[in-house]
Length: 278
Length: 292
Image (cartoon, rainbow over all chains, first blue to last red; front, side):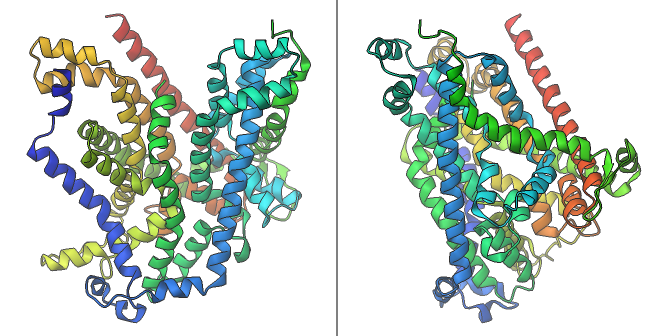
């Protein structure tokens, strides 16, 4: 009965609306793909040429031949992987401390971390920029990675998850004489794999797509990430002469993230169901 | 028994707390201090008290950027919430078709703002863009979305909605999964129709998710920056300059760090006030629901 109410809800009009919506979602992506497969000269003043053959891979060949774009790809990869690893380590340690150990000021310190959830990045970006200037960290990987490690949500997330693991497990290990570190490393950490991969996917996506911080921290073009590099290219190509090449860059830059998304799609949806709505 | 109070537990939280204090809390306090000073790229700066705030209150450019930020937020948040909710209701079912559709509607959310604006600039451009091309095919004069003062904010809103519809859709889907089946069974026994079930069971059960989505989206759109900077550079004649773009230009274009910090504090307070108001409203709504 219930199944009927839930699953027969969509009539032909509903499906037509959905398909129209899907077409609106996909049209820009398809248009971009078609533009990226066209000879630049053909597109000047006639972007509708994108709808006609011949198509070519020359724009992609030009990207592979352009060391700067590859460098941006490398930078994005280093920054996103570094940020993800750092967040996982810091948030797991802090989550274990807050969830399962007792030490002076624990509750107050946890509230102190929660305050961070309410601070928008634009409220701190100028002093952060100053701080990193003093430390001579601009245009460096640590400079690009460090601000991303401040993830109060990650700490909150790991704390909540670790609180849900039964206490008896570490009590038994304690009786066997295991140290706190051994319990953390050998017992708790392996049990948090699902939470780790969820946090990893969100951190990776966020870091890969971040525009705000690398825009002001990386001022040398060889230290740009893909997002910033493409933004700079976008400004230069305002006159549409390199339209096909620009679109090929967009497709090229989105490719790794689509792969991550497709691999982890189920995980993302499940993670939302488990955490966000409580 | 495991919880003999022991300072060594502090060692686990110390690495995060150290970085957190240096990179987030110190800049937060430093920003407050900067906002009370006149600081430029060269001098050490001097204390001006509320001077920057007084100047902001009189600055028509800042005022316009705030108004435009509110306008674009009001265009985006309600539309995004309704569209995401409708999609979630339609796609909350098994089967490959629905799974594929969910994938399609979420796909744009994994793109960076740079790529989104790159794509939409060539969707919206009247001469070289897709919409212009489509308009000509139907014999209509294409609209200059990005160069008309009245069209530019709606164009930013459409771009943003296209980009960000996936995440709230997932939140609503998660919310729908948590509604107990027996509520629907009870409704079916009472012969409730589809609309009645939607209004009496589904939507009230989703109330908390709706508020969560509105809160998250409002906070996000009040900080709208990349679309405005990359699509239009705030133009034409400042019509799409948002508050964060104002902050960015003031800080990294004119290097007036104190003045920009004051603008950042004002925006921070606005976001905080809006979020707290919505939070308070949820508390009341939930209380009213429980107390009926």
